[in-house]
Amino acid sequence: MEGNLSANAVHLTQHKDRRKWWSLTIVLFATFMAILDVFIVNVAIPQMKKGLAATDAQIEWVVAAYTLAYAVLLVTGGRFGDLFGRKKMFIAGVSGFTVASLLCGFAEAASWLIAARVFQGVSAAIMVPQVLSTIQASFPNQKERGVALGIYGAVIGLASVAGQVVGGLLIEWNMLDMGWRNVFFINIPFGIAAILGSLFILQETVLEKAKQVDAVGVLLITAGLFLFVYPLISGSERGWPAWTWVSLAVSILVISFFLKYENRLKQKSKSPLIDLKLFQSSAFNFGMIVILAYYSGNAGLYYVLTLYLQLGLGLEPYSSGMTFLPLGLGFAVFSMLAPRLVRKFSINIVYAGVTIMFLSYVAMIAIIRLSSGGASIPALAAALLFAGVGQGIIAPLLIQSILAKTAKEDAGSASGVLTTFTQVSQTLGIVAIAAVFYSVRDSHHDDSIAFQSAIWILISLCLAITAGLVKLISANKPRDGH
Image (tube, rainbow, N blue to C red; front, side, top):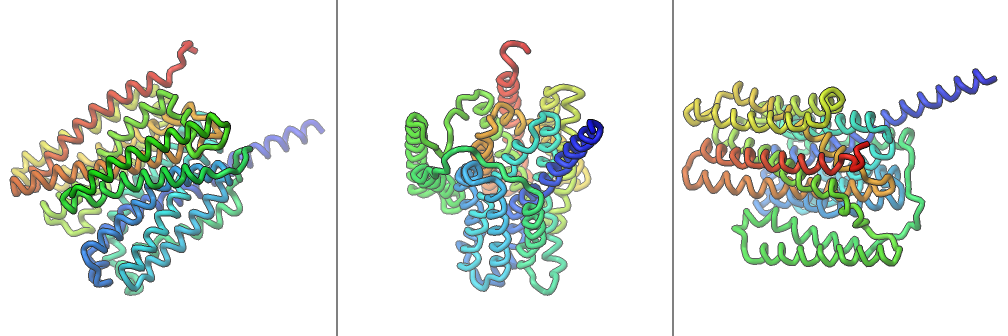
């Protein structure tokens, strides 16, 4: 009898172990789709503009509408997962994203496509925060959580590069003579697989709290982030008119008022959108600083590298995308290896990651200068491989360190804040680093000098990342020495 009970317990444990890894696979489908759609549209812009007879302003909104809706609602999406169930919100988000992708693909006018992109961004904001919070809830064991976050980082790296490569392939192959529409239809099979898998495999996790929505908080944070992100997206292309600066200033006031309001709700024992105790953790705060430096640099690199490859070296979109492949492979492989490297060499392995990034950026500048202003594509691809290795080592360990001391019941809120800050950091990086690229390009009429100037900013950010990691790792060390 005891032997049967023991065997049943082992079988149940094995079933739970398999289920959580299958759950990880399902939620990562969503991650892949959301990141892919940030990058894949850029490749199709020329065909999209021609096919819909769209203006430049409308095409800008096709790109910006998704990013804007996605960025401003991530905190809300994360909190809704805490309150109403992460499985429920994940399925709602994936379903909305899949339908929105279908609407994008069948768009007959630019206004239709823009509206569908807004719907797609809103759906992504509901869907994506549930990924990190599901990982937090499903993998309480620190070792397994590290592996799960490593795979999560690998998927982000692959999706970022896949946007460039897959977009080029879909345009070139022109399946069913659908042209640019295929960059949206590619989401459909991923979405259906994620919906079916989540229905049967994902387990529901919801807080044992009153299901009270902080409606005022939702409105305030949405307005504050909109006022901050929109001028960042539109300002540089419009020459930074006065309204962009006014919007940024007002956004700070609105977000400050939001934080005070949230604190007042907490004092009254109500349910705020964000529990400000998150920011009482020095590890969380230092982690946000590292995220700012890390993700702004990565996004800036992806953007200006595309410009340099196509404008400076004259590569076609597909060839340009293939040049990104070593970067994505390095990122993906070493994101998965990072937890194993930590077990062998300790968390200090992240400093090796920063060093590799630093040296790869220096190598890019050397390659361009030795090529007399051009660049050897194989040599540049090798440097990009090492850049991906460095980035891949850092990414999962950074997320794990930030969330290490986050309470389980705050996983959704913390994930929403983290992903929001990541998205805003990427937008800031693209705006700032692209501004440097275009400024130097206009003054020197030389793409290689402009690209080198952008790389010098990335080198400087490596130093900021190192300083932030020192503080982050120190904040995570037990104070009593145990």
